[in-house]
Amino acid sequence: MTGGGPAGLTGLDERRGAWVTDAWRHITADRLRELIIGLVDVPSPTGDEGPLAAHIAETLGAAGCDARVQPVDDRQANAWARLTGDGTGPDLMLYAPIDTLTVGEESEDVPWIGPELRPDMRPRATVHGDLVTGLGASNPKGHAACVMMAAEAIRRSGVPLTGDLVAAFGAGGMPTNARPGGVRYNTGQGVGCSFLLEQGVWTDYAVIAKPGWTVSWDEVGLVWFEVTVPGLHTYVGSRHRLPYDNAIANAGTVALRLEEWFEKYALRHTGGTVAPQGVVASVRGGWPRMAATTPAACTLRVDLRIGPDTTPMRAKREFLAAVDAIREDTGIDVTAEMILAIPGTRTDPDSWVCRSAIAGWEALEDRPHEVIRGNSGATDANILRGRGVPTVRVGMPKVTDAPFEIDFSMGMNTVDVRAMERLTRHLVRTAVDTVTRTRDEVEGEPS
Image (tube, rainbow, N blue to C red; front, side):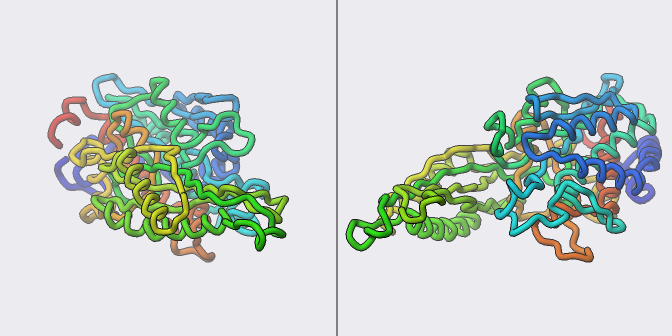
């Protein structure tokens, strides 16, 4: 990519610069605001994305895109749209998940999310000038809206494509198993993205829109463990008369030891752009209806992130060694079992999609690309890369300048339309830079 040019176009030749400029004219704050409000107002907790997939397909279809709903079951579905090229160039997928981390209903979210649901934790959009709040307004729905806007803009501008541009929206992108009443256990962990690929919605390259205003070519995977902590089942009235060993108290000791170990683990495995973390995420044990007795066992759930160079089996052995050390030090006969594994992945930084995305970032920012390090978030990029599709991740930063406090949930649920416009411009530029070339061009050296 050579040559200079106006802001955001540096590196593009005259023809592609004109195509990108024309597509950018169709990106407006009003349309982005309209798109994100439409997405937020359709609830899409993991496992129930069907109505939102239908909304996305209908919206893109109305813009002239060949859009479809892809059911996974009778409640869960993906959406995707294709802009067809002449077949001489590479195909590119712009991808975003569409399910929200929490549900937006007190029956499932409270008290774990807090004592009550705030307005931003519900699937109802509220506009505050350039900011829009509502469940998932930033992650993932703000990013999905940018993918929709990019597809619309390229379609409306009539850019002559050599390769196909696919805009895909996956169900089940959140790190979760089935919610209560789910028809399938595997409704999260990238199941929609995997199904898209399995059913032939495949491309040469992919860009996933997820938080972080940087181009990332690698990210962590994750392994989950169930840790079982034993004790004795007994009665409070007999505590002073019978042998007493409380599994709940033992679990607290084990959890604290694991939390200490996670910090050391992260230091050992930090490298590249990742700093894999771990947490004790939940505890289960005893009868809430019967506080007079202690349980014979208590279980902890652990999420341990792993870098691209750490296999799930290596992580399993390292974690089990830590559990063995806790058992030896405390005398608690704790055991653990790995119950989920998704490897971390990496795309070659010299891959076309990485070079093009970085060139676009640098042109829009007018400075060298800033790599954000210390990441421990996993996305469906692992599914795409794991199936052999070179993929980069690019997104929006978390909103920090707002008339309200930004905590974790508010960060997920607040999007800045100005940041959406910048991300959409980047997606359009990367797409046009890719699907207007021949395959020989992108498989060789930068032009």
